[in-house]
Image 1 (cartoon, rainbow, N blue to C red):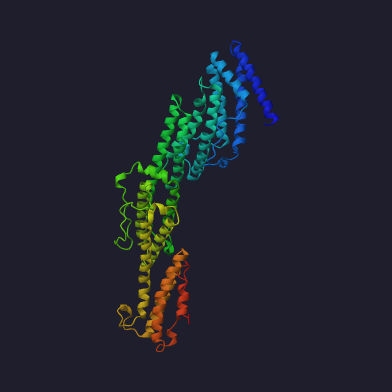
Image 2 (tube, helix red, strand yellow; image 1 turned 60 degrees about the vertical axis):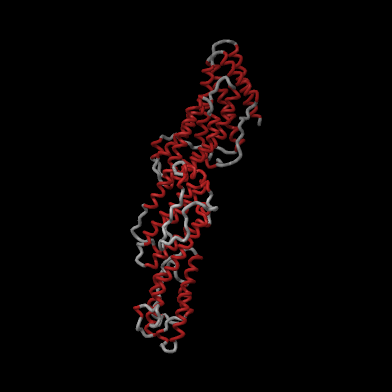
Length: 529
């Protein structure tokens, strides 16, 4: 402590001694004495504020400097010289004994309340009405919620703890001004929480609302301890009510999220059969929710029938064949403590798959429908396997959906390459297409060339963004095409003019590597080996 701080506290002690002498004289408390008491408490507030900033290393410059979730608890004691506390306690006791308890509490409450208001002001906490909050756009509200979470934690775990400690040191069991001092600022913070809970149930708000509810639940024991007794009943009651409303809001917003997925309608197919923005949004949303697994599960459990927590069957995109029964949660990878959350996550992905099926019907090209579903189901599966979602969905869900996207790949191969390769079948072969029967070998080469070029032009514009999946689909397509073409070419190369044999197997293999890159290409008629 520097010389300036020592000098300030010496003046406080002198002021305190003056008040004690005035009060013990038995005279009426003069206006000068009241002013000295107010100045004394004001100076004490400054000392406390200086200590808080120095000891806890966060200043008033930016709320973002506050650290959320730190396990380090701030000091519960305000570090003021014992002489000051002793003299303030002596002043309080003498004022009470002299019948000035009301004046003492008034001055103390006024000065300390101003200090708390200044704390909130320094940390950019505005006094907002419910109407002000409800009118905010999401960006502004999001910023204010983050600020609320930061300040709420620190004001409860640091400021109020220190304030009550100071109150106890000065007044002991005789009086208390703690609740009267902090009630209005605390209610200001709770009013913001109530306003958030009354807003529209928009999915983008859910993570922030869960963060608010989770913090409120965490701080509840400390609120109960700080506001114990009859005098703190109103604060404890209001705190619990706001926490309940935030919980109800979070639960309703989550359920609205599922409805929003089901109602997402597209009038045009998504370009290139790529991963749809809805799939990306839903899966990343579910991943983010795993940070609140315990909280979300407990909120959902309150309104779920625990005896009927069965997994709703996800729609089979290919056919109604069920690969593995998923009727119960008997899966070691899906912890029982998250039963309600798991049930709802299964339901959400089922709704998403059903929506994707409808979106797939917008494509005229059957092969592109399969690429679209392949992309999206593969994306869902990879997101689950590479995140905490794997512990929610479990091994059975992953195996089934791996089978689903593999089936889509198979269906794509059949719908795309069987018609093309039908030109390379002999008439005697059972696989020869009706359109290619009776054709001579050179006409079959011409038919294959035309069909292959049509596929190439279309499917170079399609997109498989996952590199490994793209390579797998290309490799399987190459296996289909190259083997059939080589066999037909070997059989007829000596009987057909080279001008009809447009491509070699090496040419085809290279061209197949251009598929699914998202940029349409054409093969001109002059292409030759």
